[in-house]
Length: 179
Image 1 (cartoon, rainbow, N blue to C red):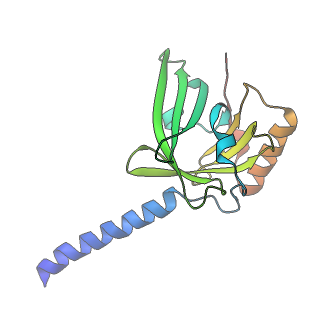
Image 2 (image 1 turned 30 degrees about the vertical axis):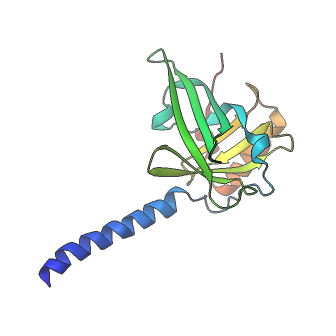
């Protein structure tokens, strides 16, 4: 019986931990809703990062872009690039994104280090797919993206108001330079 407990308890805790980690990591913040009737084909291509929170993996980065393309297996290739102005070098990271449910709902999970996945939720987008507001799995992750290096003030205000209503502290956003 003791041997069974020595094995069963750690295995059970491990499985529970993995289930919890998996369910939380690809979630969507409370109050946020992913875009419905999403057109993945229109979303593909190059996006400029306009604003973000100060994440460890993007620290000291300007000129950040994300390029999305279709993989042969139906997943989406994610290529992030940016210039670290402290180290004076370009950084690049390539990952993969998959839809959480249906391609018509803008809820995805993305991985740059498998088997770890994180939520990527498009929670607002203009009708021409030129500007997007993207939420991560929690209120720690938020991005404002644009097809160009800037964003109209009306879109900026729309995205900031939406993010604030969800609970994001938009005063902490870093506005990315593109030069």
